[in-house]
Length: 165
Image (cartoon, rainbow, N blue to C red):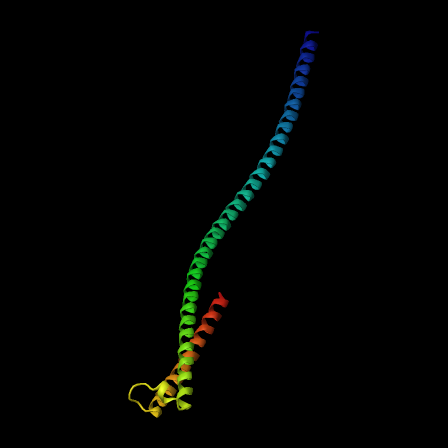
């Protein structure tokens, strides 16, 4: 009878050990499953974080390039303002010269017409004959007409430059 009891207790011990091992195996499987899920989540979150970090770095580089481009555009704008104001000043100077040349040409043309009409007494210049005065007036008129044409070309050129800016 004691032997039976010992066998029975040994079998109980074996059963308890099997139950314990089964429980431990199930606990181990549950822990491994949880660890696997946490590992997957960690990998997914790490990957997402890495992609977002790379996107942020890329956007930061783009922003830096845009800022540099904006600074370059501002420099170009300032340079163009300077060019425009120089061109405007040149146009104003050319316009003033053109007005003076036009006025001088008109005066010389009046003198030429007076000389051609034979108005020696009112129009005589020094000891020169009317023919000499007429030749000088014609030469001066041609020179002034040439200068007037050049000034008009310059004015048109400056206007075209200004319109191109």
